[in-house]
Image (tube, rainbow, N blue to C red; front, side, top):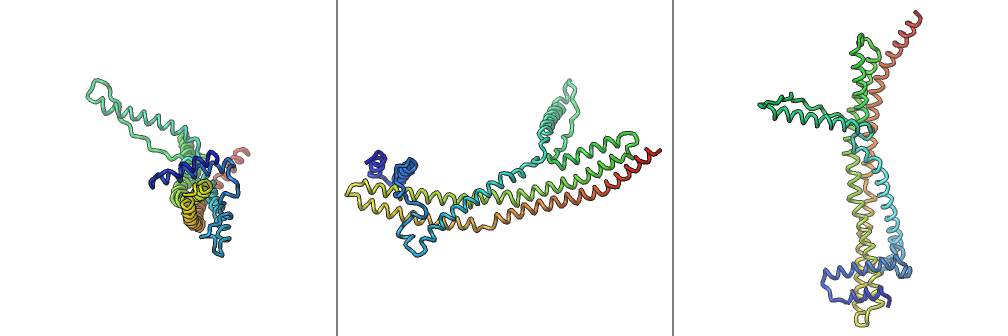
Length: 329
């Protein structure tokens, strides 16, 4: 009898209560898993899931081969489904952040934070220095928060640039200022569509997509783990039978039968849950919502930019004509 078998035998022969029996099962399963990992158990003594799983209660029926093959296929398909969710989620989680397309927002946020702190100090002084001999500053209104997206930033930049040109002498006739105004207007429309796009993706795609991962897929994975644990308990019981005393042979055989029944039940539950996950139409519906939100956004963006570009084309032709005319003179 080797060291592991002695440990299992002595642990199993203790007079234990119900909770302690669970502890004993857990210990024996851990020992079994360790011995398998170290190659101390012959491959033929490991109950393989599913092809080698020959339990008389579940695999005695004519569909036994179908059941065994089906379990392995279901495991592979659920693994693939989970991986597909994770691969796409890794990229699309960017939509959880408003500034995913505008890295410059980090510097802007720092500047806004400094401004907010300064305003807070000024307003605190204005409220608390009244009635003292110290001069109290006038309170200042807080600056409105700005959206940290590229469309909003383009709109702000074009608006500011047009304002600068319009403020110069003769600016009202500046074609570039008018073109910048058209550009800003187009991107204002795009910016509003962008916010609706992000909200739709977060609500209709990201949340349910992550829910599928954390609930139904996760439940199926836990059911598979329960099958593995039950299988380890069964093989541990088989190993214990080899080393048990003659007086405990009958109990050891009963333990194996109970472990077989448990494995049958756990396997049936796991199969049902894996099938449920794989037949769930939600992932396809969620992906449809993702592309629908993107289509609506890009269509709105294309319409706004196309309209602005048409007017800007006229300005461009007029500016080019005036330039050539002035050169001819």
